[in-house]
Image 1 (cartoon, one colour):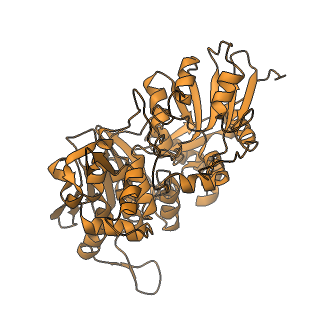
Image 2 (cartoon, rainbow, N blue to C red):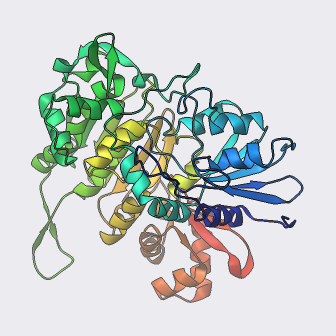
Image 3 (tube, helix red, strand yellow):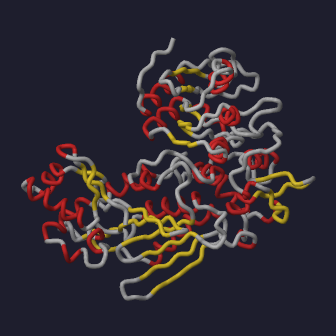
Length: 498
């Protein structure tokens, strides 16, 4: 009998993972590795119930066991559900079976916490979208817990998108994330760039020859090719990734790049070919156009790249992968100045990710366009399931650069990457830099490389008396550079987005 107790959301996430580990590994004729899944129902009266995959019968989903087997006749209004894997979506199960997302909606559960999105192309983010479309609040597990789920389901995740064929499913209203999943009847196989396909094939380690039945089946299973009558044509995503001229049918495709030199001159270039070729093209263009600088921080003269190219490539990939392609009047943009790189991507954070999570580099792993993300992930350009949060933070820290900053200027989500350690001062809003003393300027340079600090940490780093450190932080707060959180000894100062 479950005991009544007040649980925090974190405790319920951790409980779902503990239940997940009890999942039964059922035998399957198709040899596909089943996922381990745990689900926790936190009822309005404070009681909890749990279920894992296969708990009562091999193959039964954890949500099905919890809602249909254990609570079929119980009112679940006001309950919260925690599931370690995204609930399956409409279209992912053969009739007459109903998907777990539909069962959750029918049970009138209004808040669902999802551990990690299901990478199977019949589900990937579509279960989450179906819940959101039907008025359910969806939140994601903390990133460190997502890593645990992914690690303990490594075999399932590695195989889910490597299947050469996906079982045909039928549904009255299959979930769809984007119209780009639909076929493009005018874009036959010969209209795709062989060079782009070969780049994908080589970087993803695919052995099947381009044009072979096995290669085409692989692209179909990934949502890049589709059958249109007796012809095989590209989907919208296939056109974006591999089309010779994707802008012919999608004017919003590609990337606009601008270099603003210290002299005031500008140089521009449009990258409007296959998406898989753009990251390397941008990197090579910048290498050719921007000179190396001399590192004067040491006694020796050392050439230092003018740009952190790994960061540039990752930021460009994120912009191309995670943008909202339904916004047809806007394109991804890259602007390089002597102090910064500004990468703008149409569309805000994908629900349920919030802007504050992006700026804190703590956003859960979730993709707006899972098909694009999978391809770039297999090519080694993108983190497997996330938004590049960890690598952005770690690479800038390793380079001694200020932390990148997100900003929102509708319809663009913009990411600013700083090129030098002094850029945090040079890019301060007009009139703010002049209001900082010499010591405060040094303090801000250090602070710009942190995310959250206390007055003690600031005092120690700058070797200042704690009272002086506190005065600095209060001044930064008045200038809206940091935000004070908490009170007393627990007070923290969080960098604000600009």
